[in-house]
Length: 450
Ligand code: 9MR
Image 1 (cartoon, rainbow, N blue to C red):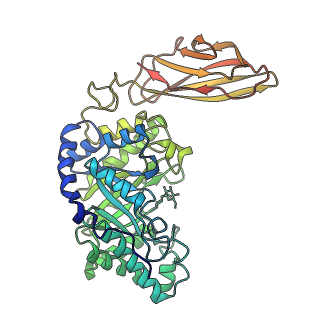
Image 2 (spheres, protein in one colour; image 1 turned 30 degrees about the vertical axis):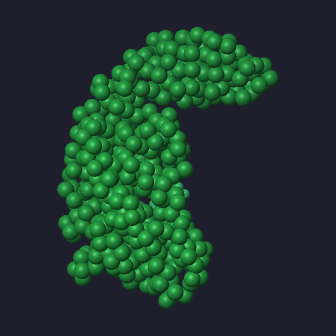
Image 3 (cartoon, rainbow, N blue to C red; image 1 turned 90 degrees about the horizontal axis):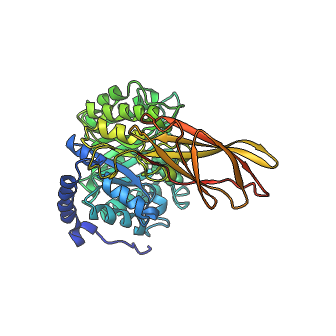
């Protein structure tokens, strides 16, 4: 058997849990106007998925550390990352996240122990008995390493089929071990770390439907037979094809009524502006209306690193500006100091913010028309400034709906008549440029607002 590369129990060896608890108290006392502290005021955590590879980026880490009270490693605790070959555990990336979280007084959600996806190739060919042994060894290896350090574990992830039938999804575990694999995983998990909340986690179970009914029946059965389960995670990946269900709160409540906690585990909502903000408000309000909804996790810090980055589904844009959705969440959580309040640590200026995006609206051989759309953040604004850097050869012959000043090939544009924007509202300016041999796109810099 190969060497198991792990410390037996990080908490036991380093006394980190006690240290983290102390820092946690300081964390929530200091920051009264952040997602984490506002949620704490409601008795909830507010978390985010985190990638170890971004922790070294100062703006990423600053936003993470300021706003969130819980983290979920986005990929680093998955089977392929932690046990790439049988019996050989590697925790380097996951440890980085856990260490970072603890140094900031944040809690950690464990994601995930048994899942059909991101499985290393050695797992699928195993015969039934061997697979059972490997599954239990994996649970014991991971949970043992982090014993006492994880508030909730996604023990089994996405074991039910999408669509109308409410049947189990085909996977090596389901196909070889049968329906009982989930129960076995939960029993093994309870013994491995009795302090961790044990969750079943899935998507498209956010409203009442055949899939959520099947999960509901399983949880009910587990509770009636004493199979250890403490919580159900609702991933809550929403977009126009899968909107926030109108019976979301009702669905959370019916699970809670079975005697389990519910958690919103991977929240993201594609969209922008006030419509996205309104959807986020619905989700937060649903959780707050269910006393056993113990916390929410968004699936990433910034739009630019989201698994659905094209859908801009998160609370901070690619420049870490607070989006209207951020203000909506903070306010739904009862946060006292949203953007615009003096003292809001996320926005130390006057709270005004904006984003600028560029599109080419017309194109011909010697020139083009460009358009820059300015969108106000979570607060109304009375003015904005956007910079546009043109390729050196190009020159601008006319500009409308804005007032430019020039420094070399950098054009700084301020409003002409269109400085005042409501929260989340947009305006745009346009310009005609001569290519002079370069067809490259201009670069739009950070938008500033007042
Ligand atoms: O966000 C994760 C992405 O970086 C990975 O490439 C992907 C691989 O499957 O997993 C994503 O996270 C998923 C999560 O683990 C389970 N629920 C769905 C999430 C989004 O796909």
